[in-house]
Image (cartoon, rainbow, N blue to C red; front, top):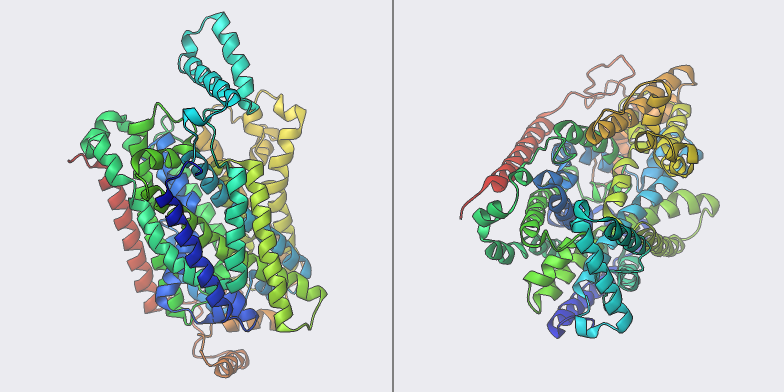
Length: 639
């Protein structure tokens, strides 16, 4: 059945049953919006760790790490490990989400700037970002399931057999491309057109991604819509364990077949074990890695799901810190295992698999036996669902709180929860559509890297600078949206651009600007071009925010005072006491909690306390230790 052993189907069935039961149990805990969207703000340390780990770890994180190391060597691990030196900052920012005392990022932007326009833009950005995130995971699991259910030769019909035969001919010609005569080149070009049009394929499956994704999406909708963030948190605990299994399950069998670490080094070029690459062997050079880290540090703070999973749903600030930092360091460690799996797979299957997106599924099929293949599929499903459930709840909260309630205010709590459930389902359906449209993991991930910058620059500055204005925020968001979303999709459609001799450069909006200013970029490597592009994507919005803020009307003082009173007042679990302390801070400018470095300026930068300093340094030390482990494992040649 579907090319799977009955033990595999049993493992998948047990997993599906378990999470649906969790969803039904969690549904009983939902009494209002805060329960559905924020888990009642009472999640403990253990659950918070796995909520952060699960929401940040999806099927694409394992598959993308392995596909990049399969393609570019161990330096490809930076597609996931670039977050390593961002994680210590989570110790600083996690309490902010708890202290802001909001349910969504839209709530914050409305409170800070009093603008429904800006709030609406944030809702639109969030839906786009979250659907892209879910789409990456769905694409990864769809391709993996497809390769795991490949038909055997005797199961192919006559047309499928002929198409596979033609694809094999195409692959043979491609491997000897430099030695082909004119007739063979003509045949290669003919077959290449068929490949590009999906007329011929290397394999046919019992279950294609277009068939499996709607089923997976339906399961996510059922348990996520029922139980909200409670269901997401509880299932992420179960799924977190399965993800840890996922990170290790392929390595023992694969390393044994390749001859362990020494055998892997014998079969793989030495350059594939470089953690930091030169620009010849891979685009992951030190400067490209650095700009990716900076860009994601700017963007991460505005990610919509962070208002719940980043600390907003924790019962106190220390729980928020421990949950966010520990959960994400767990992910950083497993990323190394996933990257090593890709290099190992290259040693075993480098001459067999042409599509890096398929390597995880192919390795699973070749290395695992009956029952374990089912466990692997369950692990991947756990990974995709652990992110999708948190994202869909975050997106539905934004839609309900910051769009629907504006149009239909003063409804009952049950009504808004129902609307939130409908929005959750709509988000998953949208993600399936995006997955079908792009069908490429790396393309989707590059969108995810860039989208948060649209609001990230505004959010960072709004937390530290009182003078930041609504006009500056709206203008900068519009600019970033045009440069990140509109123009990258519009420029490739303009014939003048595509036919230009520097088309591969000016297709990027920021590089297009430099080109029109007469700056010659043609001699630069891809790494340098991307570094320049991303650097401009970060810096220009900050410049706009400062310039426009100084020439526009200052924000309302009482509104800004309330935001910083919240940020400077530790959360009390007693709501009445919490409100009293905020009011006390507002009415007393010399409040003892006021620790501003520049007390008579527009900057709200506090002196760091012992907890912040020690925790940040300890977190940074863990980051160095994990990076050291990555270097060690890449150099290990015994046994």
